[in-house]
Image (tube, rainbow, N blue to C red; front, side):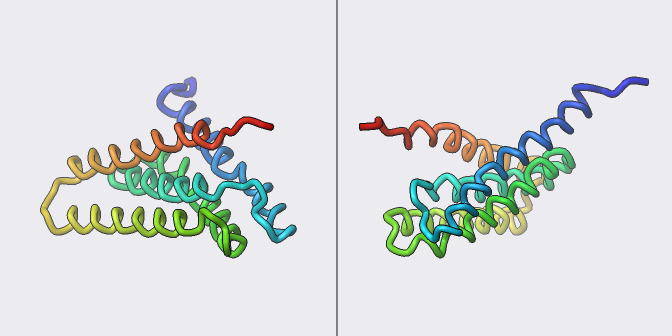
Length: 154
């Protein structure tokens, strides 16, 4: 009996690749922490990763997909850890207000979505679809964000 590559093998590979992706910035963040300065690190993508991974974890929970939860929960903790390490280095940084605002608005949207779901009587299936759209929106923003931070070298 072989392993179901599409049903089990690919999702297991996705768990490792996804979490490796989300943990990739940690060495650079920890290196900058030892220096005590953000340097060239842009904290905005880290903020989006926190919100995105949480959205995917919530989506995975509502649709009861353990592969989706496992491929985002550790990454969520890594992203939160990276952001927590970066925040003290952001005093006076031009992105500080953007990071704070984005994190606050993202948490507010999550709170509002879940409050609406609980009190509206919306079905789990419909709410799952709504969370899926919300999480996919973060993916689109994240995939586009590297292009917005590329600047020509003088």
